[in-house]
Length: 130
Image 1 (cartoon, rainbow, N blue to C red):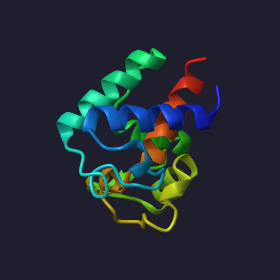
Image 2: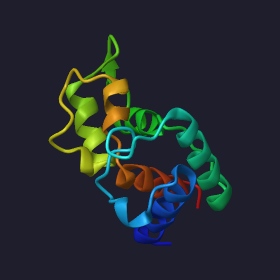
Image 3: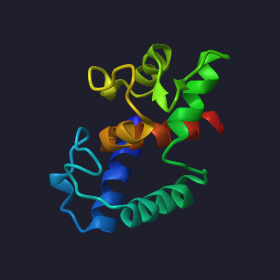
């Protein structure tokens, strides 16, 4: 399976769930800001993706994956992502490069997630569960 295949399915899923024309959904569109999704939309989208790929998804999977890569170094301190945390977060989700800085909160990161970020999270989960 290729990342591009996952990205296309994520776009189709968002379009169907949120009633947005697929051609208006770009990989760099933010889920909450640009596309105006709400938490109910996201739950529906995540459920569809879980069923399609037989995986379990949590929107904060990026945090768990970052903590694994840090091997004991703190990902966040007092709810704020550390410099090491930002480094591995960008490694996991390269589309966030330049958008995340040390001291950003998980809530802020979630607001920055794009269609491409979601597709990458799904793709990484599929690869992990092979």
